[in-house]
Figure (cartoon, rainbow, N blue to C red):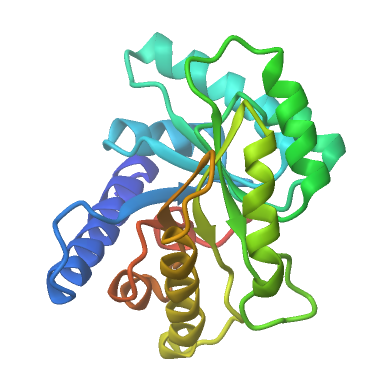
Length: 242
């Protein structure tokens, strides 16, 4: 089996896992979308995944995405493949916003007002047909070493979207503490879902909390059971990062 065949087979396995998790949870088929985490992954491997029908890809480093995104899109067009739908899933600082704003479908990792303001400023100068969509990353368990907004600070940040014209919040994201036991992630996933449901009941301008970005290679089944609409899977598709 060559590398292209390996990636296609891995994708088929992950899709089957998601489909089984959806069915087990009584959810509609396709209600959880797969984002293939392609940070540090070679352009050739992303193209192999594109050829196997995967369109959503998650990047974490602004400068890597700036360079690799162009390479992948140029090669995909030459090969007659669909254009990737890019997601930015890593921590985002104001000085890296220029690499991302207006260039990705969804930013998963907003946690501060200054970053929001810089995205707004950057996107205002780009001819887009819709606002830049983003998610707010929430640190639901208060893990010191993890990025994310404290749950108590979420209402104020959501309210601040009313002052923006080119940025829209469509959901929440979480990175639970890592454990080899997928069940250890369940409290974080359930907490994010409850938080999303509570805040979605409040009408706010430029806020439509439909998405829950949660779950990775080892715990995607638990995430889907708890309501994930976006699962971020890298290792199970591309192998351990080199």
